[in-house]
Image (cartoon, rainbow, N blue to C red; front, side):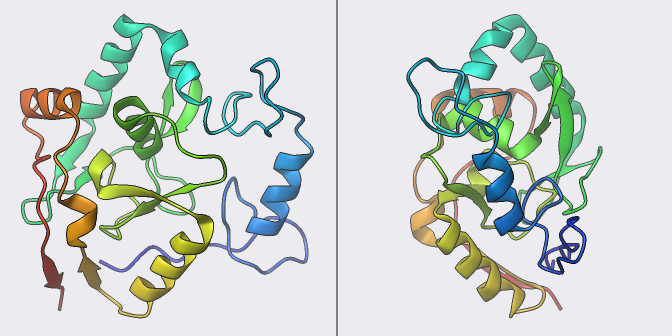
Length: 203
């Protein structure tokens, strides 16, 4: 399925595509730079989520506690529908302007694929992004996203957008076994998560 076209930046007079929070990459970076520093003492990085930088983002989930996290996971499981062919976990709830799954988790809005990735895989490197290698922004399956640099994410997106309707998985992305907690949780909720790689062209 082709990626949902991205709307333009919300800043008046800017026609560049939305990158995050309604702004293009240039204006989003400017907003982040002006937001001060991460809540963690001594961390000079700019805050991204809840006052924390990307590497310290897992602290937001730790603060929720295991009971709350389990409750939120149940809500997520109830709001996804597995694709019978691709195994994507397609979100049946709210989507943002870019077509990404969004949900209030622990009192704040999260992109659901990011919450699940951070929960099961841990922190990202600073300034790295999550690339939907399945080309479905509404997919929240944690091992259908891959942590990449911004440059690589844009390169991958351009490659896929140039091949309308083409989905692909690379062997080196999905060959590794998912973390055991992810395997156990997904298995207990009937969600596909086993690693595999394949190519399919939708006509």
